[in-house]
Length: 154
Image (cartoon, rainbow, N blue to C red):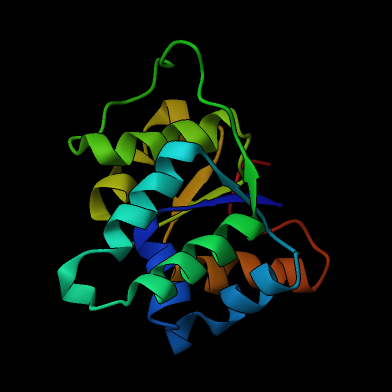
């Protein structure tokens, strides 16, 4: 099942080791979710890891970025931007594009603007945008049981 994680979700999983996300982390570690990403999203992760407020040592920054990069399946940037809803925050646009062009089942984010954008009809027919907590509550039970997940395009 292909999924896209925004930078904040990656940080919650790899930098902060959020215990509330242990089911999602376990599915990723087991290779049961295909994580889609693009070079510009990886670069954003590297840049954010270096933010002073995280006090993350450079070696740890490199390790997190490398660990995440090993988990992803690259999605090429399209030659021309697709006709997708525009995000107010230009840094968010790439996650919609990755999910759209990578044929993701889910875009997993806690970003309120991305969650709102995901309700746009042009996107909701292609993938579901939801929080990691909602993914664990709504999609994971169906996946564990081998059923079609409750969330996502059918």
